[in-house]
Length: 238
Ligand code: UDP
Ligand code: MG
Image: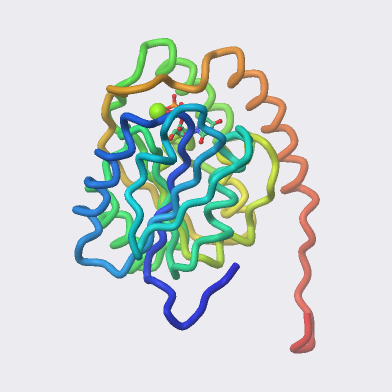
C-alpha cells in the first residue's frame, strides 16, 4: 500500500466486469458526488471482454487497474483497496445499482468515529428470487459469523485504511468484509442507502454460483475468526 504525502483523503474503488454502458454514467455521477472532496477513483477492470476499459475517461484523479482475465469481484475489490492511497476507502458497484450520492453520508459516519460504514439497501430493486435468497443468506450469515450486519451484499461501504489489513484474499471475501473487519476489533456502523434497478448489462451472479459458495465460505470465515491470534505484548515491540 502506498500512501505518499500527496495522498487523497478518499479513494473510491470500483470493480468492473463487462459494464461498458454503465461506466460513463457512473463516472459522471461519481465526479458530481465527490466534487467537494480530495479524492481518487480506482477503477478495476476485472478482465472485461467488452469495451469497459475504453469507456473510462482518464484524468489526474483516475487510476485504472486492468486484470489479464476475470478473477472475480473479491479480487477486484482487494486489488483496488491495496492500490488505494486515501485515508478512507469507499467501495461501490460499477453497475449504477449503488448511488454515488450516498458517499458523503458514509464519509460523515467515518468522521463521527466509525471504522467501517456498511450501506444497507432499504428498498432493494432486484428480482424476487434475489431478494428472498439474499434475505435468508443475510439472516444466517450475520448470526453465524457474528458480523451482525443486515446486508453484506450491498457493496457500498466506507472504511478507514487501517481496516484493509483485516481483509484476507480469498474468492468470496467481499461478502465477509464486515465479519473480518469486526473480527479484528474495528467499529461498524450501518446506514440505509439508495438502490436502483440495473439498467444496462447483466448481473454476474445466479442462485447456483452464489448460495453454495457463500455457505462454504461462511464456515471457513467462522473457523478463521475462531482461530485468530490474540495477544497483547508487555513491551513496545509486537
Ligand atoms: N464484478 C466484477 N467481477 C466479477 C463479477 C462482478 O468485478 O467477476 C463487478 C460487477 O461489474 C459489478 C459488481 O461487481 O460492478 C457487482 O456485480 P453484479 O452487479 O453482477 O452483482 P449483483 O448486483 O447482481 O449482486
Ligand atoms: Mg448489481
